[in-house]
Image 1: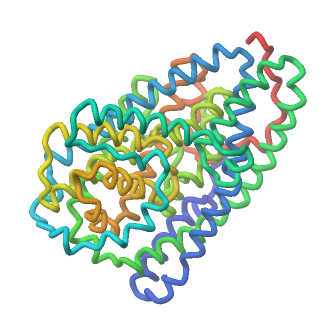
Image 2 (image 1 turned 45 degrees about the vertical axis):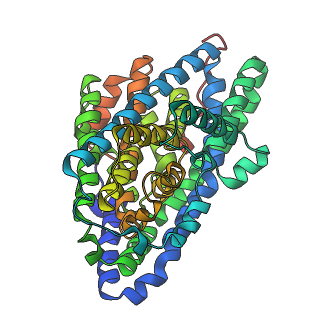
Image 3 (image 1 turned 120 degrees about the horizontal axis):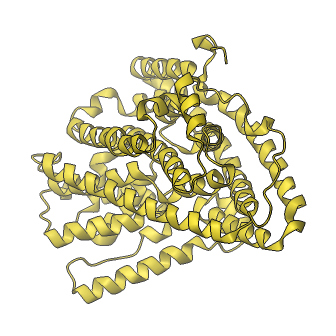
Amino acid sequence: MQRKPFYQYLYFWVLFAMLAGVVLGNYCPECGLELKPFGTGFIKLIRMVIAPIIFCTVVVGIAGMGNLKRVGRIGLKAVLYFEVMTTLALVIGWTVGHAIKPGQGMNIDVTTLKAAELQSTLAQAPAHAGFTVNANGQPSEWIAQVFRGVLDFFLNIIPDTIVGAFAKGDILSVLFISVLFGISLAGVGETNRPVILFLELISKAFMRMIGTIIKLAPIAVFGAISFTISKYGIKTLGPLTKLLLCVFGSCLFFVLVVLGLLLRWNGLSIWKFLRYIREELFIVFGTASSEPVLPRMITKMEALGCSKPLVGLVLPAGYSFNLDGSSIFLTMGALFIAQATNTHLTLGQELMVLFISLLTSKGAATVVGSAFITLTATLASLKTIPVEGMLLILGVDWFLAIARSMTNLVGNGVATIVIARWENEFDLKTAQKVLDSGITDVPETRAEKKMEPLPDAGD
């Protein structure tokens, strides 16, 4: 495919919008503060269609597989992979926080911080992050509390109504409904083909809608960055530079070393993969959320050689269960607040933070500030680290969200490749050809594909 001029690529205009947003926010903060609706509106437009896209993609993927044993096998491997990688990310955040101690020496008096300012944040916390665990109690007590918390986590995945899950846009609940419906549809047999074809058409229509909305990304990025720089200012980064460097450095290490080695073992280069998804990375950088690019990632992972049914099952699930960047932040943020407020933690209490973070990181929404909300709820539940310390991070959380979201995005892309290769549903030659070409555009989107023949029920 012939390369387009650089100014015709979306990432060029997103980058231009970033620079323009920084300039406007820095030199005319009054104007920048008025541009927040640009970014907020864009996120709302994307979230409006995320739930139906996930539903159609997952249902078609599962029903298209036909063999439910295959669905279970892929799901089990995905869960295993997600748990290993998020645990590793939590440990990396915990290790870096221990080694560098970004909060040491700040000597913050907790009584000077107003916890009331966090009430609105706690109100947005996911239900499963709100259980109380007394880390100072007897082992039998906190084990029982954790067990109840785990049960609450699973109970809160089940929506009150099917329509309610879509109305709230809860990815975990929509995913739960999609898996159940997909399995049920697959069990119907050959008569399910009209329904699958109908959902394919609906999916194609929503993909076209996303294609139209995503063209507004530069405007959204301009508004979001202008507002953030206007509100907090570049100078606010100074006192927390050490924390920012720790989070960004840890995320960079995780992407280039951990994920890079995984891709290398699967015959691909992390640098070429990052180049392939650079437009998505720029959008995530500008909006501090990985949610707007989920539909584009589905298309790109299919074009890279991953089987369509597997992508439809693994990638949406990763957006809820494989938040590597958020996991790094959860443990590092908790240690930072403990160090900044001179809160001494025993080894048992630190391990409790690590374990509870493993639970609360699951199902955290991928919108801006979700990890901040989850960590706030986690600290409020544990009662060992003062939750008031979250106010120290509030001013720079948007910048931290950039690192978290970009890491989450790359992590889910790599997860899809690894699991597809694990299942022998990955075309390595196609992937190498696509990555070597250096072209970021997908020549044939899902909305433009002809109907693919569905596999036999026994496939």
